Image (tube, rainbow, N blue to C red; front, top):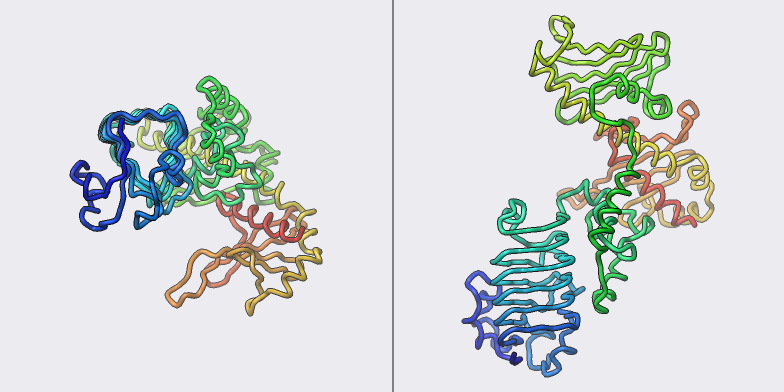
Length: 477
């Protein structure tokens, strides 16, 4: 192994044609590259933001930049941890052989591997100023990407890519729950609930203040495979569940109208019901008649037809309903396979959807309770902040968002975007105590300013409402 500092133009011909750094050819005469000839085995962690400790012969004053453009390894490279915290621009790494490492946490450069890439622990690529390109086989235990560049088609189709656990940034449901992160990462590297109020990416769930010192010290970031399996089992056991399975059964129909949960969302006095349209043009309704004891779940396919399951006197009826003729024949898989398949699909979907609605409803009622609501309304510190900082619209800053206290109402304005005239576009959250409901209700407003109670099915809205409510409470402490 021989290490040298060379001008970019001296080694440009060694670069593969699809390497990002080939575009620098002839562009910068003073740009330097660290060249490692042959195989390179390093036991010390490699910080691509601070390479002087491994390469004391590198002098930043001899270069146009503080860092070399990249490190070029002409053979194979075996390393402990490779990382950098500066994701806007950092030293690149080009390996013409195979690259084997314990953990790689990078961003702000290209990691190019002409051979195989083997990462026994974590590969985390962060931000769109970075990219991974590996030409050979890719073997990674945990691949995490947050707005990072990689061959999406190849990774998703598994073409020469073997990943045990993939955490992609477009998996919104995944990073919303954070289950995989909590199961795979050591606890000290997962942000606490207080640190994760705004969940916009996997990145928002990572404690970087603990992560980078651990990488520098060569510590383990992930739990063992055996511990991960235990963690996944515990997370599954702890998940909020209403239904034991997805069968169309009397037991599961009863669980739709199970009073402690159904009472959180149902409307009506004589006949209790919860209903909503979904974006797929399907209407869902749960109904319970306390007098007759009839319980039912109803799914309507746009304006074409409906199917429903009803339970009366212990007898389960499954029927379809022609919306034009009003005919209501019994439905079986043999009598009408298409409608029965529709029923099965929507039953499974509605179980999952209803479970998520009830779970978020419980969380909202816990976060936005009467005590907390009254505390905000009568908080002198908040009123002082509000009176001193409110604008012409009667709203005070809440970070990039706004808040207001008007009599017995708390208003929060979430900044969504700016229009063509650079005016802010807000989404409004109105919190009011409702004696009849016995809780703090959440209201919204349409484009015409008409107010409405937010449907409990809008889980993201209720989740954000709890987060913003907590933000207002915190600035008053």
